[in-house]
Length: 135
Length: 307
Image (cartoon, rainbow over all chains, first blue to last red; front, side, top):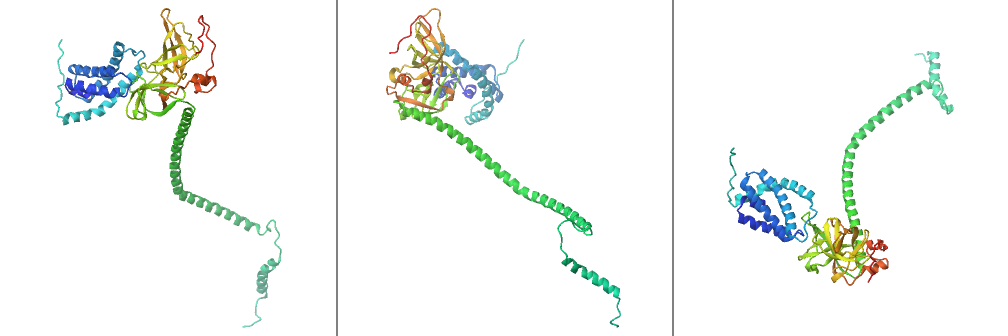
């Protein structure tokens, strides 16, 4: 989902985030609606973040992966309070932190695979965001 | 040559030298110390024999050690491999023994109850750290339906959330979205049990006048037959009553820890099983057999009598 959000358009990203949400919901007691909201929040926040900061390297992919974990859990926490009858009162923050630390370690292993898929589908690389600081 | 021209002295010397051994044959050899003329020769011979023996035994020992090293190394490697195989077998056998004991307890429980139970193995746990659910290896093909109760020998685990062909997702009682009708065993006060976090559940919607105390056992009410009546859920650790309001809630420590689950039972049919009766006869799940009917807590509200 990260790679689609980074290297694909908005529509494809949203469709895939829903598919990912359907997959995740079968492995958790989390309501489907909350999973979808969290996945959508991750996908769209990556799309927005990409327009501000972006460079075509696996290090960027690692950074985005780690931040996405926080976005997912914080969105789930907020949406459970806003929408659920049984809000999350004791979040497992320790688990969140561990996931946020471990996910970027796996990211560099997957980045070449995703780039290979992009090359196979002949997708153009998105432009790197550059700019000048004016005082 | 003149036959008689010989030296008589030489002849006597020869006879004496030749005759000496013949004389010694006739002498007895007395045990004991060697005669004085023999001792120097004996000493020299003994010393040289001792030195020779030491030398040859040392050479033999060193040679055999080096020759045996090859065999020793081979034996060592073989014994090391055998040791590792035996250790692995021992680990596997220990695991089998523990599984055997666990399964024997489950079988004994299943055979002594009126409930129709289906044994299942836990194959996965919840993906999210903020939720508590497990996946078991039984599904609708084996007769599972939504909301069927799931228990172990110790107590209530949860209930079936969704079913697939050969697997089902079970929401554990410690999940905040779970809800099970429950009773305070001592006073029969009724409430709704739901999860709070991974180690605590809470009994909500108790009436303010209900008598609930720390240490009270919480059991299933048996409503709708999803669980047998009187089956243990947990023990009260604290009670919260606000200064105003019409209800109170109790925090409960569950008897079953989701992280330790390996095998569970799905209650296909509770069969009208009532563990309240079994408590009276001292038979039932292990927790029930340890429960003592505590005296009513000191309060202005009299304890409710059992139905």
